[in-house]
Image (cartoon, rainbow, N blue to C red; front, top):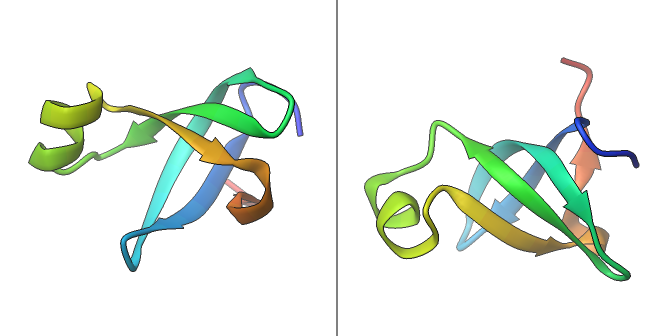
Length: 59
């Protein structure tokens, strides 16, 4: 997948949507769309997620 791709992933049994900002060897830096207050507080709305759990969305 490339940067600026919309993806979906599961985190703590919640399905989240986001946009890939940067690609690393085994993970992506994702800007979470509509983040919860906890995600904003702990991760500033951005999370590093394993490539294995990311799926491209059709949006």
